[in-house]
Length: 356
Image (cartoon, rainbow, N blue to C red; front, side, top):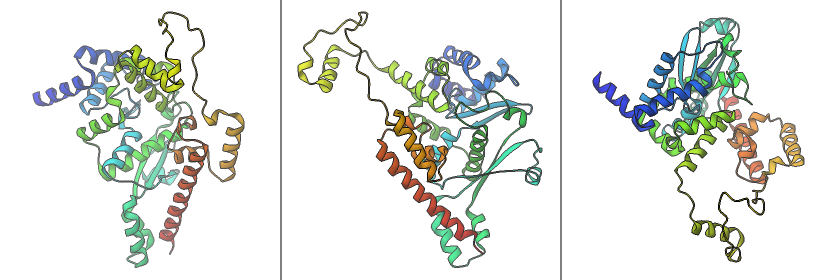
């Protein structure tokens, strides 16, 4: 036990520094974390402390919704690795998989899973891409029925939310449906059934690569105050961490930056003290192409006519909001078309597997 306590302490220290910093984290959780402030199932200080200890013991940040999902209902406290973390872990350490498919359970399906009729549940299924060729070969060789061969390789999981939890104020972030949250749980369940869970060392690698290891408690407090969705909150916290760690810009660096933007002729002026009012308004970055009303309407009208939903477009571009896509409109169109082509190919493979 002493060794376990020492490991937990070392993990907490690596994430948040001293025990005073860990106490600051707990206080921040009580103030800003949605999962700690549910109006129907608020957490006690003791429960928050337990959740914090468990998270830091796994090298996870309990304030990062892209790493851990925590909620409380009448059955107790639930602690689940976030879809974002699981997805990145599978992609980096296990390989790519097909686009997940979600089916809502009802009636006898709920009963078969031991769930009440009022529960909201989704089944998630997908295939590892490296298995597709083997599946196709087995079907062509008539190794067994397509349905049985499919079952050999299909990865499946179930996500569940009880009705009272589902109807809660903070169940889903702004801009997302409540069913989306349940589907994320189903995907996480499918992956963990297939591969288990990431090791602490793997989580630390993922945190370093994403830049999440730089985020501190004060960064989260600032980010949560904005009230953005999960992705926006994490992005704001990362930005705050980057800005915090950057040294003040020297006059020489300012001159180099202005020269890069405006040419060498622009660097002979005198820099104002930051307390002085600027003579002219600062130059603003060009707006994103999606912010143009005409372009935005035509963009969405085109994909709607192609039978794609907003979620399909976001999945194709791997973003939660179009204005975070860093390419131009042509790059976006090309990427979406490529995604559609891959999706059609996978559907054709599925039809072959389902055929008698």
